[in-house]
Image (tube, rainbow, N blue to C red):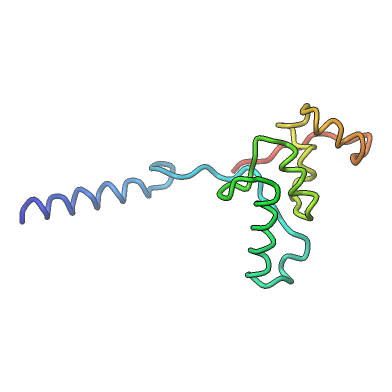
Length: 120
């Protein structure tokens, strides 16, 4: 009985410590936050299904909706999804990628500059 009580106290302290601001175990924030034009007009089910179809078709990770392959991100963008910050190929992290250089020659303005995500 005493052991159970001690374990309950210990687990409570441990779990509350993990929840404190600035500490504990937290998943990384998503770097990209994809939006869909007029997504608010869709029902939740339609929006989720459209997102799911795009993720599967473009071979993106379900949890982060991200990929190490630029062509996959461009595929998702071509399906209508967009980033508030700007086109994915104008992101500073993948600015010099050969796929993005080709994409920018075709789609970007000549005076385009790379953007950087402001992480809070």
